[in-house]
Length: 290
Image 1 (cartoon, rainbow, N blue to C red):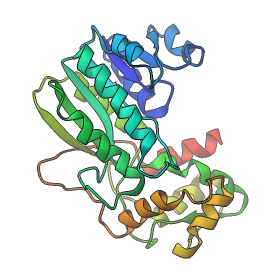
Image 2 (image 1 turned 60 degrees about the vertical axis):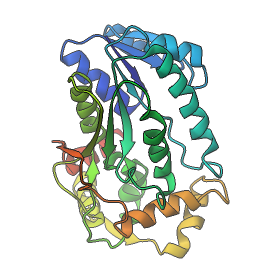
Image 3 (image 1 turned 90 degrees about the vertical axis):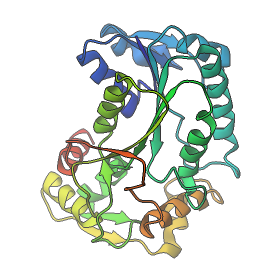
Image 4 (image 1 turned 30 degrees about the vertical axis):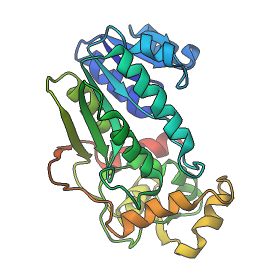
């Protein structure tokens, strides 16, 4: 039995699907069991536990061969990442009580850096907080999610354009499909090892914003232009899309770190896994569902 957090999301769901396909038993840790009813029909044992409930999480982590751990994403954190730190404190306590033999964590490219990460600081804090537990750890440092382009489906289809903060438009960045992250997580959690592993997880190749626009053009059936949004206009754009005013700085710092190559793959001492899902496959799926 493997416990999986985030099973109703894309990455956790892909971990669970891969484990089930391998004939493994899965315990899905959920905040709302009703939203996971389809998983229960597939044989998943559902276990209700909120991220702030140390007793429930301890019970969920107990009696399993391994745990897949995710921290809820927060795209507009308060200064100092107080929410992330509170969640990590609860997760650390629950894992220290349950002591599963191993845990696999969703981390991020760049998490080895101690500063200049913006939103990815949460992944750095995760790796820093959990490493002292007396269990085997594997941190999956995933590339930029291709599914981040889901919000661009409407503009690609209706306006023939996609706005990018990643610059320059012809630079290829490491991207990854969430399905491939989930597969890597499931493969890793069923392996045996001791100590701490850091695993870079990327797609079959790197892609540029121009590549993304071209994939959208193929999917929607008409030309799609890639437009670079000037740095000075990012905050206004994000606030217009729903981000709280005054809370956009971590997001901007993260994008700056990608654009400057401060965040990168090829870190010494890391393993590397390449997925098989192409950019065009994911963009086509997004357009079809959108």
